[in-house]
Image (tube, rainbow, N blue to C red; front, side):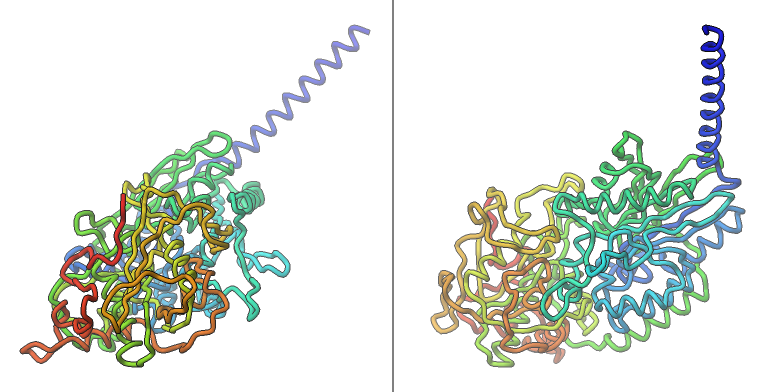
Length: 596
């Protein structure tokens, strides 16, 4: 009996050893090293800048462009390496170069450059659902998203992943879109006429649905691939919690690397532990072609990344397309219409990495809100009480000197239509509160105050924010307003300018006010402003925001050169007694006071 048991045990161990060897062999086969270096070139958040044209300072351009990308791809291939070109989203919207033909030429340039894969970012939806589907069909590369789905059947709209074979290896790329896409594009684009969502993003209020969608894609792709790389448009901003790339890594397992976008953060390489303690390489290039990412899977199996900030070579064929399109748009928008006497700020003059327009008052925030206020009051005579200009829609500052339609278009590249509505004082207070949610919060990842695209610049109004009060605004998993704060309001001492008495008077929560602004926030729930849901505009589709801003430029008093000069003294609103105006102050005229 003992001998039989001994033979059985020996046989068992032999079988177990063979099985383990087979499993090890399979594991080694899956994790085999490439026959030659594989280079993944990556971009994110180009926002149609085309050639890293820094509109605030042309001297900062470092020759990065689609034509440079194409030339880099050719150079890497010429070195005998395998190359893949990918993008992590937000490439068809941001400047007039995207808006003027709703992204068509950008897709053409990406085709010519030789992109292989792209993730769909929130601003890919800015021209509407139908338009993004048209552009996806025009693209000669593959769009991915593992969490963008149709609500009627829960099926994904785009492939969750794609496997690319290079250098004897199979590399799986998993696309991930930010659940913030609904509020950070235009919410109504995703809805039917009754306000029901036709499309949505797997998210979950705690991020669990997003993590599950990503893990499902990893589990499906991993058995077929040697390496699994996430191509996500999630970012690392505090305001994006719990949907950041770091949190996705920490709540999933099986990724080797994560190419990120959305937060415009420069992360050359950072290692984040996944749910099983394995380190995942996280990287992001910043934005606006200020960097090109280069990830190398070396012949020894290691993965490394670097971000290039300069590259001198260009592909002449792609350059021709770039320059031709730039010339076409510049000719359309380049007409001089005014002269600016002082710089208008989006970025902090003391810290050029901080978009202060998203967290405090700036002179450009005042100017844009004033342009709406002036137009509805003085041009259309609609007795407008207040105008809002959301910080996320103000994309670029303006340098002193000649001002054109192009200047206005760079400030407002999204082509938002304006409207005027009648809203209660309570709705207006709630909108200010929603916009001030992150005031006073410090973003440790960027070492700057937290930003919010919904931060509201105002005309015909002033208000205070108590940054020491924690926000208790109620929002859903998509960041859409559900109700007033459960605790104390951060916003207080809200006052509205009375044009008859020339005095600022306390906001009355029960009173109806005429409020001007973009359809984006007043009609379409942009930045989650659902407190205005259902309001029928007094007047709708008045004109694009940049046209209204241009009209305001032309309304300033003319100088000796016979052009309007944009300054406080020359403003047509200067005739409004006691109205707060100070365009020479980078931090505005004191309409928004933040108490710390």
